[in-house]
Figure 1 (cartoon, rainbow, N blue to C red):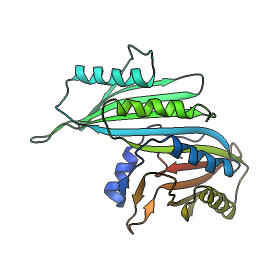
Figure 2 (spheres, helix red, strand yellow):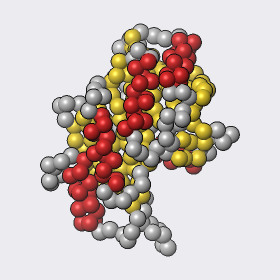
Figure 3 (spheres, rainbow, N blue to C red):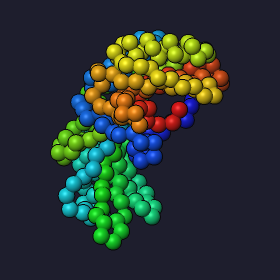
Figure 4 (tube, rainbow, N blue to C red):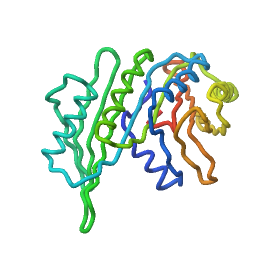
Amino acid sequence: MPRRLLFSSGFFFFLVLVIGFTPCFLSGPVGKEAESLYRGLESSGAQLQRVELQGWALLSGPPLSLSAKKQWLARAIATLVPGKDSPFLVTEGGQSFSSLTWEKSEGDGEVVRISLRWSHPGPGEEEKIYLLAGLTRKEDFSSWQEASSRLEQVFSQEGLQPNYSILVVGTLPGIYSYNEQEEVARRIFRILKAVGPIGIKERGLSSFTGYSPLLGGYLRDLARNKINTQVSLRYHPIEDRTYLYLGSPLINGEY
């Protein structure tokens, strides 16, 4: 299987700070956006592998003690995974940040990950605390609405306005030429009523971006064009399959 990252919101900050994209991420409800992407994947003939939803938001208010952070995160976990009363939290840290993280993987193909991440402020600076939550469903879209609603509630119960990103992954049999990959992207863009695609190719990877009015958020590139849809295809010779990645506003992760 190709490598992937469940949590990679730093990728988006890289886009904003280095490449020059201006963000306006999906802001929920995200169920309909995920369904639109899924329908796009269906139109390509690809077999669904997984659907991922990630959200993050900046907490406001006074600084929190470590004990208060743990209580805050435990409350969020109880909403995302009802019945989980005493979650085991993994503590990580570095010079510039610390975090508390909890992750759960079930046999039904659902993976959840939730984290509080906070900065170490310098003189005259304020501590910034972010809530990050991720949800993955494998090979099954039927229960997606209920699962994604739980993740949205994690943020709404605290009065937070989160940013979201969605990723739908599928596979196609065999290898596709670049022209065939472009045709797959065009088929998906037609389903999404998207403007585009603008495509690039490099070492067996093709990537196409555009803007769909069916999806709520967007980025702006250096030319101030709106972008909220990305389709990428990569052939994996060991599996003899072409992986199809469909993300909004961009693909969030490694592929």
